[in-house]
Length: 240
Image (tube, rainbow, N blue to C red; front, side):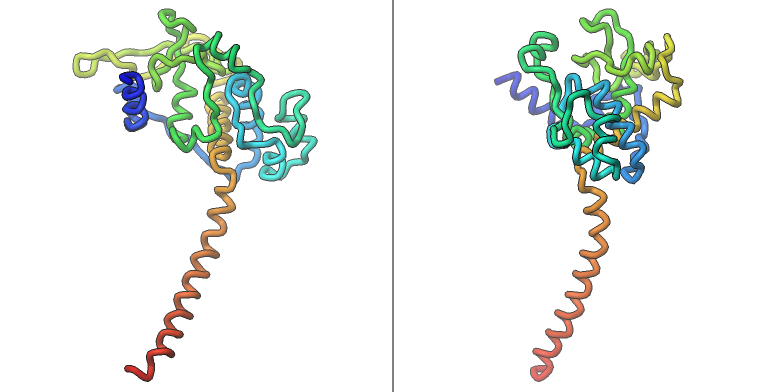
């Protein structure tokens, strides 16, 4: 019961408390109209994240339709080998292996951008640093004591934390690159942004369609209001 109450309290806490006192969230440049960014984000997600985390509400067909890309091209560029266009984006990791390796089943990330926010995700993916004291050898400046390895370490390289004393407590104020990855800092930031862009899309694929329909809905309500007002005047003209 005590663990259950603690978990509930964590869910109710503001997202900002997960960041160290000295670290601020970086701003993610989300643009759901950038189809190239979304396609690259989906590709990187499949390559580096899908091994553990599903996005079970998305099919590869959805990507082809929403990104205006040929179905075969989506299978060639984004989907893992052997996947079909109607397949959902499910991880190949089974529950038994997940519990054996990580102690629990890694969560599905279909709605992670809606629950955490794009800025949090962007900062989290950039916030891994080397920590030999941890079982996996890494920690995270935004989510301390994280229970997963850094999936993008080959691209990013290895970071080390810079500490400062704030209110008598040592906190991480920034991360410095200790060993280069295969990407430059700008290239890595762009890749992480593309992944977050894709996860924002996955959280609500119909967002752009919903927003584009908004002006028509407002116009309809306005016109209906005008007609209702004129009708009301016609009905009550003899009484006044």
